[in-house]
Length: 122
Image: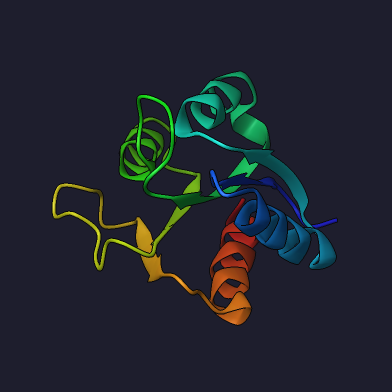
């Protein structure tokens, strides 16, 4: 098992399952959520366990993936955040520079490379 938990935040059940399986097969402990609000509540309770978050942008709930990324990187700079979207082409200028963006459809190697780096630093 690699160090630190990866949170997968995606409202589409099939995409969430694909990402979760990708991380689990690579040796990560994974927690999955369908909205940013639930993921943020988890981070509040288990901050020290979380190494990285892989989040979609558009989801149900009061917070978007961009909101989640901004809150997490400001409050908990040790947590790496990778944002993905099929509708947005880039991360807004007001998000921290540490947030990485990858468009959908993403390649498993790109996502794993980012998260492995976060797990090593965790």
